[in-house]
Image (cartoon, rainbow over all chains, first blue to last red; front, side, top):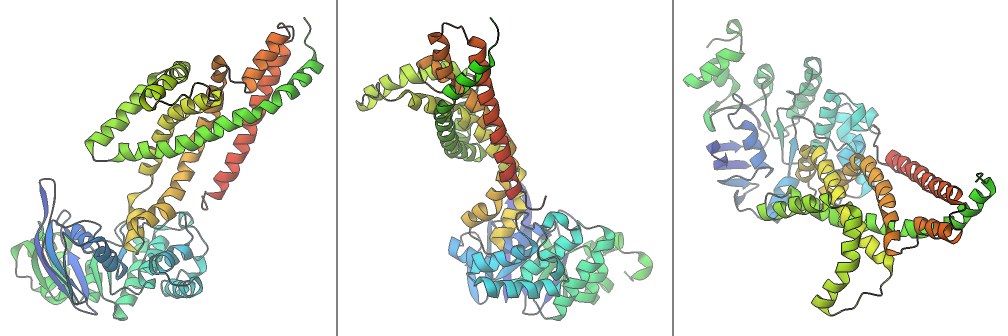
Length: 250
Length: 228
């Protein structure tokens, strides 16, 4: 349903993506792991055209796009059918929680207000934030804001949700709530790509794990394969650094 | 001479109607200043070197010219320039026009700086979130970024308005009759016999205008504070 081929991106002389291929099927929960600077976030951003790839092909919903040259219409179409959850939430500070969720429906998709609000309330209910519908983001904790961010993504019924390190800006005690919400969505067969450092979450939820380093995909497979039987030296190195030895056999 | 309070009141009400002129040039200068200041701010935020350089040089030139010098340049220079370039004679236009042009040029510089820093202060992520949720870039600016910029910029804009009201009083040097021009001519007509009464009355008028302006700003600020 989403396929990327040979995606490349540089910032100045710095080559961030050196030809990345990934393939996501409907209902997949794909977790992308990797050390910082490996290009995970940039890859995710090129999918939503928040970053323009220098070259690469995207096949989305059966249509092929040139990621460098895609025009405004194509870009807007892809953005409307994907949703992005940001590391630092990026809620609209001038809108209430409810308006944050309805904005993309009413303005972006011309959904009538009443219908949009109904959908928004359902999405907020799902993430446990309905009672805060009339609050402004500045009154909410980070974990609450991120749950609203997720509701904003879910409400537009996208084909795929892109999570960019959704919990890494949160206090440790708030991480659990947000992960719980994402797990719930995963069980509903919503397709998603999650960039994260939460290993146990990846193991529980993902049906595919991609390990990236230095702008390329080093290895991909089921969580079992990647966590317990990694083939590549680079993967083993990375895992040994972040997972306590006694829990995993490497 | 003794200060006579009844003359203070008399002159206060004689000068007050001319506040209309002051409001006119302050309002119009603010409007033009905001329009051209936004354009100048966009220039300065560009990656394009030529536009950016233009913005920076423009700011540097006009920030360093004293307002009264600029007013004279506009008043005496502009009609000649327009006559030579377009063959149109604007010599007999109303004096307020030159004051508005001068203060617009000046306020445009400070407003562009205010607008530029307000834009920078809004986290770029909100704009990205808006376009990724399906808004067009222009919708993202109008609905998400600009309302928040207003909140950030409002206090500075208030200061600039008060400043340009005061700068406008220089209009008397080219014969504009605003509150200051009127006070000045009243003083001359009374051979400076009531000089204190007249200028205290004038100061009070400026003072009251500032208070009203500040109140108005507070009201607007409340409207765009979004729960903060």
